[in-house]
Image (cartoon, rainbow, N blue to C red; front, top):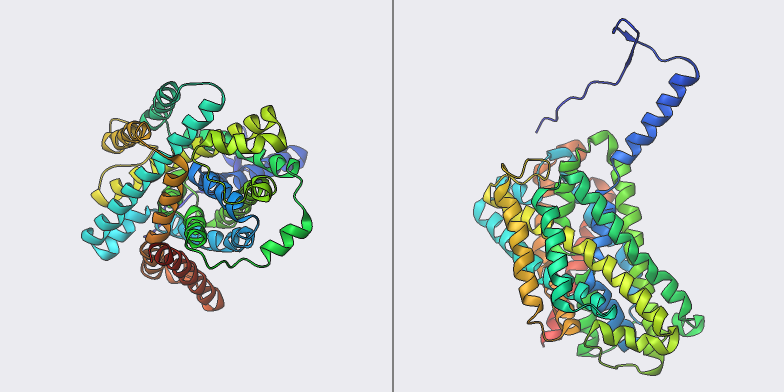
Length: 435
């Protein structure tokens, strides 16, 4: 698909004729333009990566540290390059094709495969939304707010955002609340992990146990989720990032990939150094129980503040991204207008789908018996879906991209091996869990 040409930016003299900037003023304008151009490519990657550490991921990392200490720490680190490689492909596809992931599957593989992909994505997104809203309700409980009040405020706020906001506002809102996740880092520091124990357990990661393999699958599913692929590709399109800014978009994705896994590591370390050291295997059924288990080590006020704010940031940014990403994917395969930059009147089906998903998930939260178990189960489902999601991603890359933009040589082989390996690892964990 041919991309629209953008005329070069030039200055003009008082007569309105093109001229040339000279002197200090011209140099300042040139520097400001360069900085602005760099910022143009940032946003989609950081937003989707902050959403990657969602409520379910927080619970999964906390459960991993509480039950198995530092044994799953190495897995969290290994997943950084895998996460980057997968999401970088969505950047390429969005920049060069100017289409979302669902639209490309429909175009190159037909409507049936597209509907299977988009429908599966939307169901997975609904499951994720339930865990996000449950996470927000749990954070509200730590502050003494009833579940119904938190859910009402959440669905009203995010429903209004999805119903009428343009892409820029959605992105800024997601990143702003998502940065609250960084409070998990000081929580890990305050837990005083022992370097020797950390290294010993992290260097011996294998345990022949079904619950252990379930958490392996859950951690893989918690890092690479179907809605991330759909969200970042369409976000790149809506943001209008052009091929000359692909380097900036890649940096945005790389920084986000490191940041999200730093948060996961911090959560795992904080719980492994505290709950895992003194009460390994202790069941944690609610957000309040996780925060409560940290209180003897961090203090009541500190544990509630850090875990509550972290969960608020994680669940809030993911609520935005999951809602929009799931609705984008299904709308693309159904052929609906779906850009956030279009007026609500033109894209009313897409926006109605966003608001409806929020409402259904909020009602389901009131019926969720066990947030921790539900969150881990959702991540395991994500892991089971990885072969389909990543298989389509590689197949679309081969068909949709122009030859110059495709993966070549060693990078092509390395990407394929990483994608196949992580899909196989996630699926193996699922099989061993069910065996």
